[in-house]
Image (cartoon, rainbow, N blue to C red):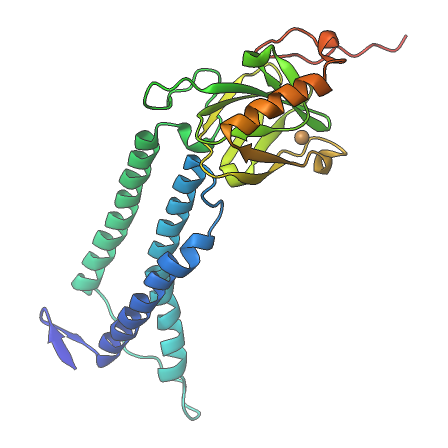
Length: 285
Ligand SMILES: [Cu+2]
């Protein structure tokens, strides 16, 4: 037994804290340096990087908390298990001020620090973190860069993409120029869908009559996955495709190709609008 702040603390407490300190010192660097680079959604865009950093910090912070709970349980099972027939409880502990104080201070510090860090990174990145911000975004890209607008239209059961700066042509493929700020204008022409470009860290509701803006800055060339993340009917699972992040010159070539490939249907497209509304259904009789 040792004496701390006038109270008796058993050697079990010291041992538990020692085991916890050693395992935490092993687990946290492993999480940050070994697991961290594999945590979703990766580093294909600025927004995805921010999300991966947040996942790494939260996982690293969870480790000491999970470890103290797990060690406590395992330690009790091993050290305090009943030996022989007698079932005996230890003496109850009541009113241990240092424990109560440590509990209140530690949990408050962790929760408040995370709230401050989360708010700071959200404001500092100033791009809305990859989520849809509605028709008038509060967080605009920094540096006065004009984003490239791309309209994402959900419909049962496909995605189409419309490019207002390129004579509003429409295509079923999606390619993005690397390093350019993109403003997705996500909408729908029938029911609610959700545009989820996983590796880009973008997820925004597609709602008829709503222009939902989500910013993204692709940083790496490559392929990304697009899914519908809102159950939208029988063929919901069919709304899946791959987009690509390409160089600026490849993007220009692709735009020219898509315009040529869709030349026949482009004159029949309705005029470009910020939002669309479902066609009224014909009434029987
Ligand atoms: Cu859908």
